[in-house]
Structures are given as structure tokens and as C-alpha cells.
Length: 149
Image 1 (tube, helix red, strand yellow):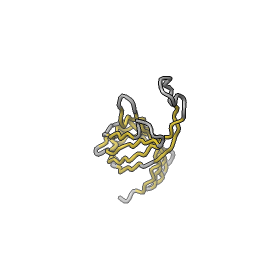
Image 2 (cartoon, one colour):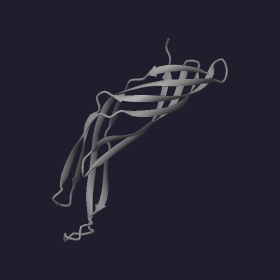
Image 3 (cartoon, rainbow, N blue to C red):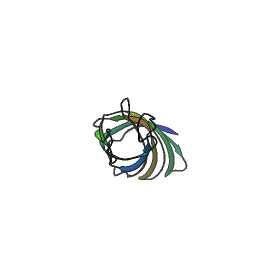
Image 4 (cartoon, one colour):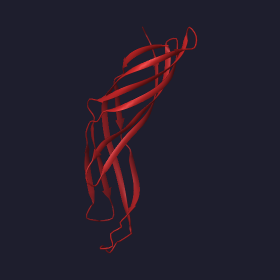
């Protein structure tokens, strides 16, 4: 097999919204153990630059498989997480800023002549944390490419 280095700039946008229920467990309050209905909205975008090493394993003249590892540099990761509840409690809404964080990624793929496909897993990274709230993020990617030159 042979080794190569790669750089693969990527733009990413992530905007999910999810409702969930939490339960208060504070015996000093009248609404102890009552459900609290939350909505979480994430607005996150980033420009990531994975820089890594790839190892090719030749199957025949035109076909090969590869594995790689990359350090993912997040150049412009920004956004926020908005948490709101509709139950009229004192903690009616929270907004958490997201800041850039770097992480590692691992991938494996197949290349045939000028075509290639790769499955990549980006390890979990901390988007934000405070004394009360914490947000972590990981992702899977499917990269398809065609080499022109």
C-alpha cells in the first residue's frame, strides 16, 4: 500500500429542533416530579478543514480501498442553542453560545479509477458547556467524489 496526505475543506450546517420532557425533582417546590416540556433548537454552522493521512491498499490496477485519520480544524464554528419551556416556570428560556472546537475523524473508503466513496466518523466534540447545560456533537459522513485531473 501507499500513503498520502489530504486536506478536505467542508461547509457544514446543523439546524435540528426537538421537544422533550424532563421531570423536576425538588421536594421544596409544589410541582415536584411534574413533567416540564422543553424545546431545543440548534443553529450551528462551520467551516471545517480536515488534515490527515490516508493509507491505500491495492486490490488491482484500477481498484483500491483506503483508511484514514484526520485532525479536523474548525475555522468558523458558530451558532447557538435555544432551550425554552412552555410550563411558565422561572427557567423559561436559555440561550447558549456555541464556539469552535477541533476534533478527530476516522474514515474508510473505496476508490475505482476516478471515482471514490468514503464513510467518515467525526468523534464527539463539546459544542458548549456551562454549570447547568452541556452540548456535545458527533457526526457520520458519506463523501462521494470524482477526480477531474
